[in-house]
Image (cartoon, rainbow, N blue to C red; front, top):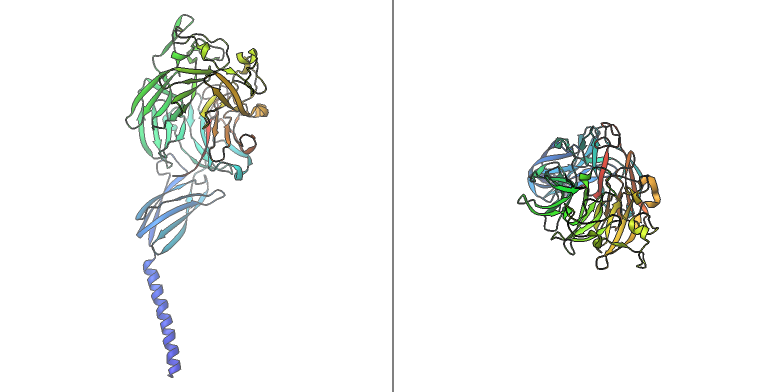
Length: 513
């Protein structure tokens, strides 16, 4: 062999040797792993799963459910053994989930298939009417949904995406009663409330904590998380009575309590009858015991006061020390406060409606007999919220508007209250112009969306459907609208409790663990 040929041989040998060393090094450092899939790991969240991953060296993991709206989750934890959540599976299909494992020497991807069952047939049909994602608040769409069950309800809150596909839900049928509200706490857990129980879940449906309230209190409609972490709850108190027409009768849904989740203790109680006229029945067309029908609360951090929505009376503000500050309601037929009607005169606390120039509206508007073009009191309202500027936004259902029973309109409305002058002005509204198509006599919701400053409006029961509408503020231009057509498969469809499907509230919601 010549010198040149020997040199060529040596060069080839070195190249082959180098390739072999690199190949050997790579094969020795490649992550060896196994994945076990646990679908619906806690039995109540069918569109979730857990990947249980074991590796021969430390790694980090991330998942992505593939589809038109991809749902991702990643973990910064570095370990040889990880459990990583999978959220947002599609129902009734073979899902493709991209798994990414990152380790010291590189990254490995794998696509794992997960088959899911179809949705229960009574889920609503979801139609996306309008969407402009460039102008919308981030997140998906959480619905506080309840299905008629011949006089009771089955509660199954769910989240759907921008294509109208359900991507998450909880089966809460085991409560055997309606469950409301459902909301995310500051600690990231989901709060779910029954009559006298509070459950805290993670997004996989795992029960983190269960709290049982004193049985003489029954939660009704609303819970607000205070800055302290305590909960403010609208409740019914067993044994409470009022005196009406000389007779003592039971009363319902007219107390508030604050509750400490850490200690499982009730820390304070408010008696709404102490500050209101329990014998005023201009808007109460059901039973006299439900004289107030408290259905919503809001906390004003500026002065530690509570805004109360009483469907059968109006909007009320009380102090932390249980003193009445004002009443926002038509000025008709208000008398003395107290469960026996022997308290103070409530008339002095009624707000006077004024226009943009500060002039009071006519007597007929103040009494609620008429509505002005630029002012209307809330009628049968729900979901009050205090904005950062101190104004109040709510869903004005239009229940018995102007004391009339014919169908009118619902709307989101914003009010400004001057507490010193005892006046109220209407700042903004959306919905009146749409008439019957968003008229929701029952329940419903409105939310201020902080990133876009848009308003989310939820007429929760419009005939056989509910709507979720996001509008720009103050223009009131729709950037998202969805219609949810209810099926009511297990009810008579009569206008009665538990005979119709209803959507209590909706939220713009990030589907994340």
